[in-house]
Amino acid sequence: MSSEQEQVQVRFTTQQTEYAVSDAAILLPSNIKKDGLSEIVNSLLDNDKPIPFDFLIDGQLLRSSIVEYLNANRLSTENLVTIEYVESMLPPTPLTAYQHDDWISSVKGHNGLFATGSYDNMVRLWNSTGECVGTFMGHADSVKSVAFGHVNDSTAQVFSGGLDHALLGWEYSIEDGSHRLMYECKGHKGPIESVALDAQNKYVASASADGLVKVWTTTEPTEDEPVETGETNKKRKKTEKTDGRKLKTKCITLEGHVGAVNAVTFDDASSNTVYTGGWDHSIRSWDVEQQVNLTTKNCEKVVLDVDYSNASKLLATGHSDNTIRLWDPRSEDGTNVKLSLRGHSAWVSSVCWSKTSEFALCSGSYDSTVRVWDIRSKEPLYTVEAEDKTKKDKVLSVYWDNDKILSGGEEKQLKIYSAKA
Image (cartoon, rainbow, N blue to C red):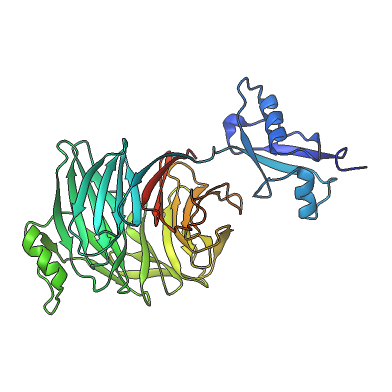
């Protein structure tokens, strides 16, 4: 009997209770694929307007027919196959692109505002209509990372770290479009690679090539705080005279990484916990108040980026072996990779969890693609290719901003895609 006539017993299950159907086994043609399965589930749900679904067997997305999956996994069509179904995420579609003068190192979004850091030393703020509403000039070298602080109806705070060793805090007036440099956090002795805010916007953390992570309060000092003697930086001394910036030096220093620290992020549920990754192949969690390295997880490759999901309680990390790794930070096992996601063909420079789904994640890579993942599968759901595939412009930063994915890199464009998880 050919596989076309073969049948297989299937039982449907879902974690989305609004789409639950009977879990009684039914016989289906073994060569049925995703679209056919979607039709059956919609029929069982008695839906007038069909809902597209994705299907998983043993945690893997079904990309072929059932019989092809079973053969590939050396399973028999005589077995009862349990298939989990989830509402499909639509592919990311390009909405717009905002042109820059130089490479974009970092992108972030917040309530219709978008912040970018660039290799032309500038931080830019954009609105949703594509207008650049603010160009913040204060760095003496390339900006490597940007992050939003407190945002309300009248003002937005943005923080930026750069190759000039400076962490700058900015305030933008939404009402009149003006902006000012609030202060410089001074203390790092190497380029700042990453900045992050806690959920309450009370603290800003900076990770640096000097091997240190520093955590500062976001409150604006009324006057300069004392600077360690012996520190000189001609570039910054020059700018200090012209923009009268206040200096902030009081901070908590987290020391333990061997070599540059590439990424820092806060635990969404606790301002006292930060996660970091670096060139020493380690992912570390820290107790900020105690200045203690709580856990250290080691892997084979450099850690380029780190992001934490409060929904899944997992850390995602991007690496120089083209792999994304998922970790449970609560586990004390030093090498407990929960899942490795492979698909990129070059370094994974940036990872960001969806804010609305515990399963959805996006990534950017030096292979010039942005990929969207459902962590219930080991392969990407969608791959967004560069317009000009011959150039291989590196993607340096991605950010999942509710129903949008932002990306930036060597293409010199802030690209915005619709992406509802």
